[in-house]
Image 1 (cartoon, rainbow, N blue to C red):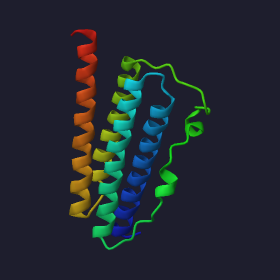
Image 2 (image 1 turned 30 degrees about the vertical axis):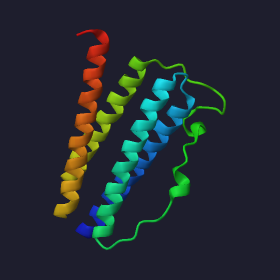
Image 3 (image 1 turned 45 degrees about the vertical axis):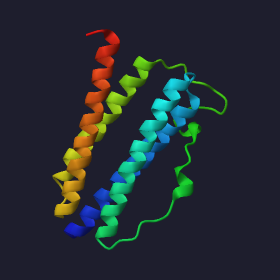
Image 4 (image 1 turned 90 degrees about the vertical axis):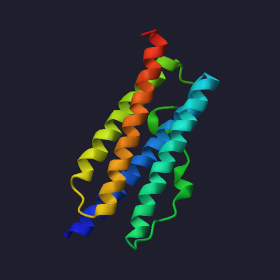
Amino acid sequence: MGELEVDVEIIEYAINREKHAYNFYKALSEHVTSERLSEVFAAFAEEEKGHKERLEFELMKQGLTVRDDSDSEEANGREYGLEEGVKVDMDYEDALVVAISKEDLAFRFYVEQAGKVSEKGSKEVLLALAQEEARHKLRFEQELELLHGE
């Protein structure tokens, strides 16, 4: 397997992770009881969608076509154990804890994958996304500290 194939596989896998994150946050936004939390999760979903688009652009810069799967981006709550009409009773603190965990995992993933790619542009995109995920995590941690009055 050549270096380009490895790079493409990593980018494609990252795109799938971002799709999953988008769907997860989108489903939560539709199932939480709080309107404020619904808006928070919808905003998270849009950020993850933006990450996916940056990764897709990286594939296009390498001369590859990206499959149009916009129809598959619809969040399905059942994928996450959320049945139709069932609301999740999650408060803001719980939402922050979920977001911190997700952003930490995403940060670690991007740092690890950046070390595996050979193409400079791909490496830069992955490292930029790692930095963005770290900033998100820090933002959520600060919000959690404010919530606790620390």
